[in-house]
Length: 213
Image (cartoon, rainbow, N blue to C red; front, side, top):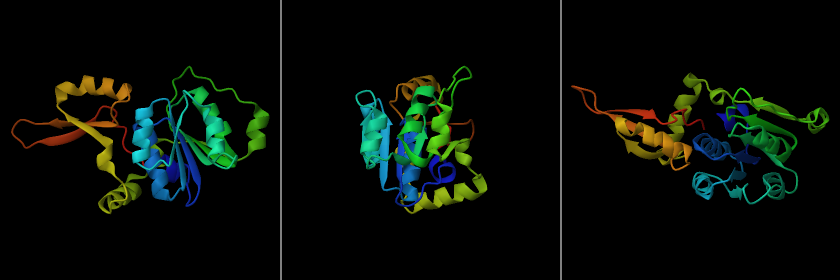
């Protein structure tokens, strides 16, 4: 949703995603689905970058070792990406997204900031660079429209949702699953519950904010 609905990624465009947790990698999958030809995954964790590449990223940038703005520009002919999706929710990474986009490009904030965070940008840069700065609430998703489309893409093999399920756990392993999520060891955990007197049911947990393509 952050890529397709909010970012309006078009065929042949370049996309950079800063932050490759479950939401960021889902945005990468969405960018691939939309037909982006250059998809840059940015993170400080090589494992997350590797996961992002397995789900559609064409390039990876470790922002702990490399200036992500310069790296994104270098990978897009010196211009910056057409769409930069910020999936961290911090002022520092939002600034990186702002300056890593092409002139008149789009920045999409899908990472959720905390109340005390403040962003400072030169107003002249906001004016002079043009384009749009958007926030993405649940991927600007309309379930009646988007869910059938995502299911269809999954059935056709265009959207590998199975790859987002890192593990299946029992209800008493939920706290451990949250720790793994925060440590970047899993994308999504699925809790398998055995209700009394019925067959096994499954429910998503441990960050089940949803796979928003």
